[in-house]
Amino acid sequence: MLIPTGSKCLDSLLGGGVESGTVTQLYGHSGTGKTTICLMLARSLLENFDDFRVAYIDTEGLSTERIKQIFPDTSLFSNVYVYEVYEFKHQKNALKEAEKLCRTEKIKLLIVDSFTSLYRSELEDESRQVKVKRELTSQLTFLLGIARKYDLAVVITNQMFTDVRTGEDKPLGGTSIDHLSKIIVSLEKLGEFRRATLIKHRWLKEGRSCEYKITNRGIEP
Figure 1 (cartoon, helix red, strand yellow):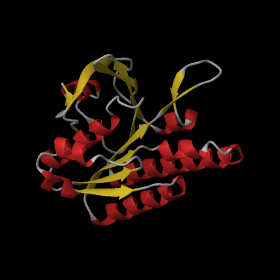
Figure 2 (cartoon, one colour):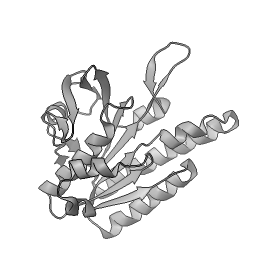
Figure 3 (cartoon, helix red, strand yellow):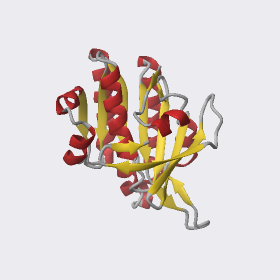
Figure 4 (cartoon, one colour):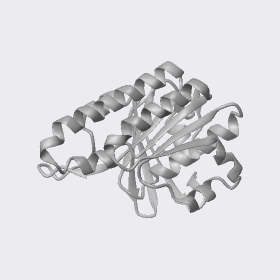
């Protein structure tokens, strides 16, 4: 099943929308529209499929104002189950709670926004880095299992860091997060526009891109 994103640009890039049964990763710097895309995706699912619901794990603090902009019909947002997480050690518990919800509700979309923000703060303690990296991989493996077991779409957002050795901007999490994410989209700033590039996909040509704007209504086109 494909869930339309609500954006012509992104739908064309993804062959019609976000795929169920797997993990899609959106990565980019702040201001590239990651959260906006997640909210639009949630709205699109609820508008197009009456029976389905959304689980949304929020680690960065969703803007109430932004929710109102993307969900003009605020009653629709009542079908989004939001879990707020403030520490990395509690993130796994939120994933388990979301999995429990999948057993009783028709959850078709599980969003983790951001999957790596709390992980990033844990990396400051060098003595815990190996353990924390293993935990992140374990969590993503768990998410992929949920996606397959319940045939739902899992969407994670990922932050960027600058590699001090090369000066390159890279997504957090390393090779394990790239391996477990079966679809990856890079988001970048281009002045007033943004560019989405398909980095990895199971059946579509990679390297294609499209440009979009972030507006009060969401992502356009």
